[in-house]
Length: 278
Ligand code: HPA
Image (cartoon, rainbow, N blue to C red; front, side, top):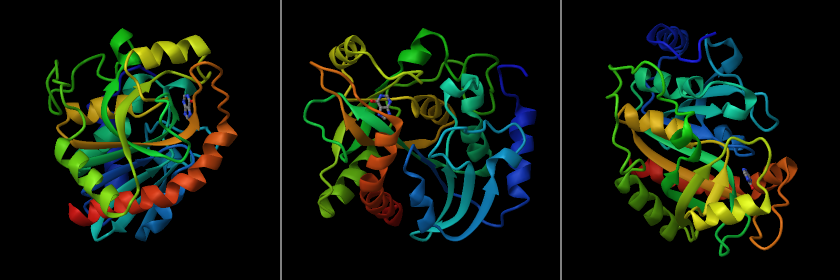
């Protein structure tokens, strides 16, 4: 299979989904590791298994269900991706962007990306939520960019602007919802690495010095594709583990999934609050 997704593939996946839903989704929601339980809040859900959708990048990781849940949340028509695929699973960066392209084809204009991340900022604790103000695209900067390959002109330009990937209006709204519900969200910069290995102590010091507050293995490719296609993006990290810059990152995938249980109720309040005001 080519590294690069095509319009035909995007359309085949879009048609497959469109034939199974009557709702026109307005908001897309991608749920990160351990955060899938949020999909249970969706009312009157239609569930589609991602492994049945043509050309879809399949997630093989524990804590990623591999389902699309389409229904209503706070009155808004949402399409929830419960279980994303990651670059470290072997998909090309281009294919990681396919779900976002399909959402764009379905008419989704707002995308909420969530992830579990390690806290590099010494003030962060496990269980904290961080609104992503910007990202450090370490991987896309050095080659594996989801927009590499033929440009899909109908979605966006060859050289898209990335000066404000995360929508300032959505950021302000999310902060307002946090304040109203005493969620004490942080705001910071997210850096995406390939994984699947966690960071060495030297990696962590390097990332912190480069300006990152949280580190993970997702979100940035989807955010780039979303911005290219003109979507409004909100990014939220759930801090699953604290990284000691003088010691080790002792993160484990089990710890990440465990932290999700503390994060999901807060994330649900935040996302429902944002959806209600959209
Ligand atoms: N590093 C990278 N990815 C992660 C981490 C981490 O510490 N925690 C959750 N996802």
